[in-house]
Amino acid sequence: MERSADVVVVGGGVAGLVAARDLVQGGADALVLEARDRVGGRVLNEELPGGAPIEVGGQWVGPGQDQVWALIKELGLRTYPTYVDGEHIAEMGSSRYQYTGRIPRLNPLLLADIGQAQHRLNRLARQIAATDPWRAPRAEELDTQTFDTWLRRTAHTAGGRAFFRLVTESVFSAEPEDMSALWAAFYVGSAGGLDALINTAGGAQQDRVVGGTQRIALGLAEELGDRVVLDAPVTDIDWQPSGVRVVTRGGPTVRARRAVVAVPPPLAARIRFAPGLPGDRDQLVQRMPMGRVIKVNVAYDEPFWRHAGRSGQANSTDRPLGTVFDNTPFDGSPGVLVGFLEGRHADTGSRMDHDERRIQVINDLVGYFGPRARNPLAYIERDWAEEEYSRGCYGAFAVPGTLTRFGPALRKPVGPLHWAGTETATKWAGYIDGAAESGHRVAGEILPELS
Image (tube, rainbow, N blue to C red; front, side, top):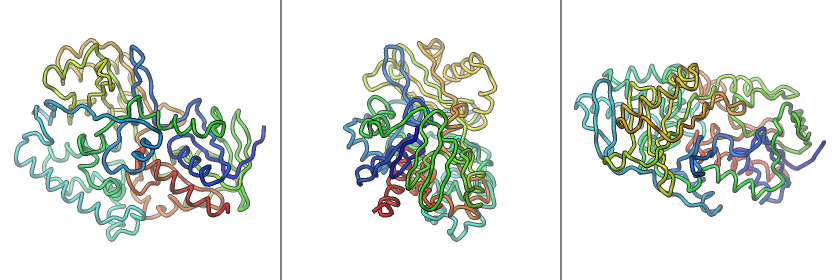
């Protein structure tokens, strides 16, 4: 079956759906090809006992994420705050802290070290233009070292370095030695500073969408109607300056004047392009792997930690389940704790069988919250590295040497081919907001060319 359109969009995540919606609203005929049997990409809802939706993919929205907040409003969705009342738990090595507010009462020397390193990171991030970080004054110096190298030179205590390793795992689902220091600084700057990335109230984890964040993608797809084609993984894109021919496995072949490729860089690299892409674009996607995370929602008959005066928020520099939040649905039942095996912990966890992994997760929750965490109603996990059409989460990152050598190819169109996805965003890269920004951008590139 062959179809035609002004623009074909490869990928039915938020980036692709926003691009298609903007194009249609601008008068173009757009068609979305999605490999899965659903829309949403890395945002996905499943069901808890009793039928309440729970997010197994991206879920939070926060202040300053203007693009996603606009979508939420336009689609008539509601949000509610992540539960933060009560004591948080922080484990730093052999020390355990139960505290309220933002910062535990750490050893003053450790606290000072973390503070000065964060100040230097934020100052560095402010010096890097999010549109072209490869042009920053110290770009070459930063891009030729890992973030781990930068941290070892900046954080002076073992505890400080352990703290920033935990932060890196939590934010990037990768290790500091995996990525370029320039990428890390760009990413922090794109969010407006480290606090915006790691805070709950006032930060990226502040709010949740009633009914789950996949409702954003579902709402966009509903507006687009039969312009969204599911079960249509793209295998080949033949392109010339005059247009494209996009081939799917099991779905339609589409001819269009323009194409938007709105999938993560490693997946874009698996599409066969004819003629082949320019070397810089091809080298770029070879150097942008995905992070690795196993997300786990554990449900209980009630949020028992709240009754004990705890927020459900916990972090540890040593436990595999290094970050935990209260993830209870809007109506308050059942109680849910969400935790993450990230980076190296996801590597190890993925090599376990399901029962071993479940035991490890439950043991960590018991360590945080006591014996009532031992017997949950349900255990729901999602290993995003095993997802054929994601191959990881939360997003892709650049390894050393990538941005300064090939960064300009990140967003630069190639003939009729345009690139979207949260990794291409200039604000909130890696987040749902960044995906929405990229969709708006490519639609803005294309519409004038169609006139």
